Image 1 (cartoon, helix red, strand yellow):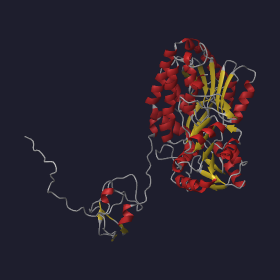
Image 2: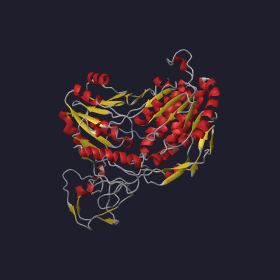
Image 3: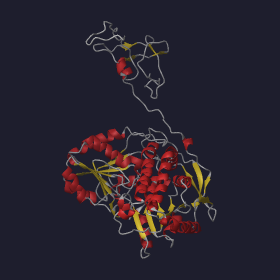
Image 4: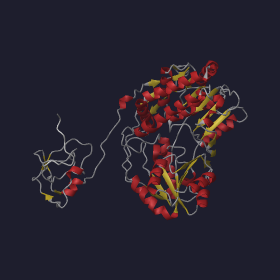
Length: 557
């Protein structure tokens, strides 16, 4: 019969007092007992056993992973116990495995369901912006190649558009699942080719791209109830040109709704980041997508111009710079082609005195330094109410001092490489202009790698409203800070740009947030957050930020 324990009975066994042991890390188990002094430990008197640990203490030894115990392993130099308990920590590298992504020596064009050589045999090199190492040679599509791709898409349009929506949805669902299955491979490849940190591609870009295909797979058989009119019909062949800042995500934004609605696609990725799109072509093959439904042509601006101007393209969707968007709009005027433009931005991130300051600081950092500021909707202008200006700037500078810049494949990296030499030169030019115009520049202590394209996080204060850094899109890790006194002044300053893509409002008053959202001329307004994306929400802008919406039910039109 099992022994029963009497409730309330206590064991007479008493543990001996825990001895005081100095430790080289702040482990709760190794702190001194109350009332014990913190003696100085002469060298040679106390020895410690050390275990493997990721970080290192100031003397360069590996701190232990549990409470330290006396042993004959090492001698600790003279130090006080508090110094040993609270060391200065440093991150150890935590790189993702580069060989997860297989990069070919050369890539062809994806036309008619297979990789083919370009008609003129041209190619261009793609490099890693973090190291400037050569990655691969990619086919350079000519106007003849674009014509082949458009004809392949036109040939596939008939059968694909007649396919029941539920069947099209199955293909999209299959693509989404394959993106999930190959997520680590895609994330590594995009970080190598683009320069952005692996934790952003792994945690944001790839999952969100898969979510877009899942979302639009659900719409494929429900288009009659999407509010698009009676028995909506597909447009035809969609010519799509995407930028280099979000290669996979922009691809998903454009291809997923087009396929769900029964259209076929010819897509041109940016010349500096073609590898993710070409990997997506392999996924299309793996998903048994009918030949010609998706075609991918790589090249520079001439290739994109040939695609936009092709007479066989029924709709053009472009994401990129405002200057190129204006040129496309002029070219398509009078042609009858449908057009969607998602262009630049100069978003205002507005912080009121009743905002949750610590939360706002995190939102500010995420708003401008996410993806090195290579975001069209980045919160590149920070408007702070005067009464909390000094507090916000102090907290912001403290937070920026903790950001880590370096290897994009390191999981600890916060700031990756600038995408190209040309973009780095543009950022440098505008920063120099800001200094020349009298703004005060500040950057945290930051060691830049010797190779690659890098720029330290930068904050400008005392910025004039007419300054170039307050009006022009920098597209880099540069923040311009302005102040305001009233909500009306904040609205006036926020709207005083040629752009109207996004904005953010930080306040505890819901009525103020709703009033600001109504007054701000921006396509997207975030409340007490920033840079939040969801496939169910439409995204797009006003004024020189473009027109049309991508995502949500609005993106099906």
